[in-house]
Each structure stands twice: as C-alpha cells, then as structure tokens.
Amino acid sequence: MTIAEASKIPNSPIGLVFWWQDWDNYYSMFVWADGWIEVRRIVNGKQTTIFTEETLALKKGVGETNSVELDLKPKDATIFINGTKVQRFKGRQPKDGGVIGVYGISPEDAPATFTFDNFVVNTHDE
Image (cartoon, rainbow, N blue to C red; front, top):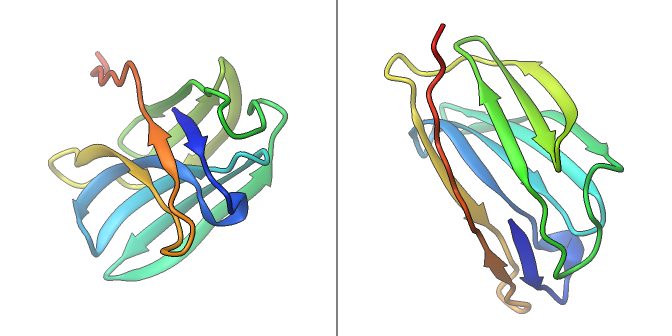
C-alpha cells in the first residue's frame, strides 16, 4: 500500500478494515507516511484505540510502498510490515469471519491519492 500523494500527512492515513460486520462494528489498521501505525476497534458505533505506535518497519515518506500483512485468527491478530512483526493484539472476529477491505482518509481541503497492489486474502488451516 502506498500514500502516493498527500499534502497533509498527519491527516492522510492508509489502511485496512478487517473483521468487518457493519459500519458500526469492525476493526481498522492505519499507517501514516511519517512512520506511525494504529489499530482501532469500533463497537456499536463507538471507537476505541487498541494501540498507536511509531515503527521502524514502515518506509517513511509520501510515495513509499509498504507491504502489510494481517494474520487473523479467531481471537487475535498479528501485523507484519515489510516482513517485520510489529504487533500482536487480542480481538474478536464476527461469527461469519467478517469482511476485509482497503481504506484511505484525507481531509476535504487536502485530497490524497492512495494505491493498493497485490491485495491477497488467504485462509488458515487450523
């Protein structure tokens, strides 16, 4: 995933939505071009931040491409960035496993361009 253009980097993250049940119940993982990552959980429309941290695993800067992998299991998830394990956290997937998708945010006064390439979803044999 790449933040191809962004004039307001702190307000223009790129990420993934996962364990999505509906727009009131899901998880999101965002990365910023300045090296930060954050995971949020939305339950009944209320947002909680699970963690926010700066990581050396991210390639910093607009135009840099970062490979992001989510290893999702029924009760936890692990995030890998550019092959480096960044964080493991507890969570809860919906009964049907949920939906996964891509996400980008930019302010109205400073549009951003995001690119996603080689988006792959695999299942676990447990």
